[in-house]
Image 1 (tube, rainbow over the protein chains, first blue to last red):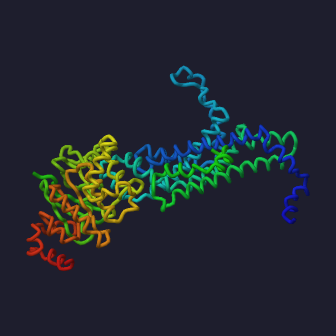
Image 2: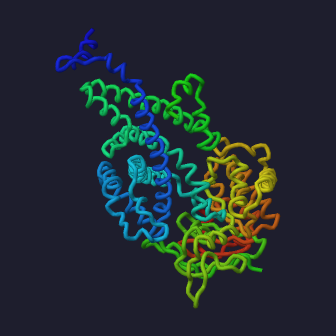
Image 3: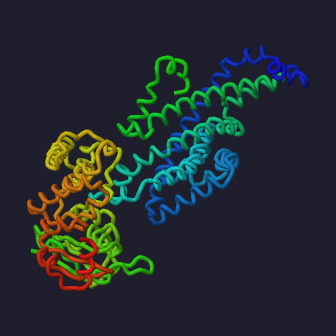
Length: 274
Length: 252
């Protein structure tokens, strides 16, 4: 009874109507927004992981110039707000698309006029790449130096050693922090709303500015975010379980794949989460 | 014919001079055992021959080729990553802590370098790896992961892995020091068989039995120099130097 009373609290300020929540939860417009949030997050996370690996390896190998350049990249994108970066990609970049040089080969001024989806995806991925780079760097450093020695003594170049020996082992170390990054990504993707990408939060807001059911629509959005993050936390736990040291068999991807071969009831219910 | 030639090699780490001018030759098919107290520079010397570290002065040749460097007007110039890697492939190294790749089976550990470095087709590399693992007595453990193997088995996989690249010389850096006493024998047997088979070997070890039985020559290193070098019988029974005598008295 107490709990129920607490849930009724918003009523004190203004009527809160759970019926409205139910009414909008599965609206096409909301569902589409939720789908976009998921899509944007997954793609940006994948982009971030790729950028992270690509930038971490030269930094670890201390390759001159390139390594330092990537260090600078990490420094900038971890050191400035994501919101500001989205503004740069979407609002500022087109200002630097001079039409005067459109005759240059391969140059198209429209290249820098990003759609809100492109800007959101690039902005989130590039920002995430900087964080993933740090995670990968720590993961690579956690592998004992004897592994690199052994690979080199067999005649592998440093890049071959990275690819075949170090990275597959580092992958296991970076799974938990990467999972946390994706959890954050699911929510940070809502910042794309400020560059008018019509994801979940944008769509919720679009509805409440008309019907004034502000809290109800924010709860609708919250429920979707909670659904995504909850499903993800189950998937993440499953992946981590499959990577525990007593399960020595198979490479990381083999085991992750095995972990994701979830029972029927999961794949059916979490269809949208993949 | 000299398979390995070490010429006046110097190496320092920060303020400590670890090697203070080391020179020796190893004939093809010869087995050299290097003894010495810890910190005498033995491991560093092996790592330089394998070109896992950079040397400060001197020259190391394997089969007539300068290891890891090019000589330009009498000065050493480091090779690029690709060329240096090619040179390293001729030198096999077995480590104290095995350093097997934990994410690969025994077979994978042995086959990976021929496949990725030499471009040997997979089927052929796996067949050769199977053969090598049988040779070191692990025909039953082809698909085992390192974590499922005993220390002695892991070290034998590591030996097979190094042999897979058909090295011109094999370096053993205290290959049995991390093993339980009852597992030392099986690894030494593989090493002895290798020596009998005509492999050129440089072995850093504390196993006096192995030195006596399998070595063509034994050297004592201390404080970054080679103190004494002789045939095993002479070395153990009639050591010439005081430092050799005191080392042997401590260890035997």
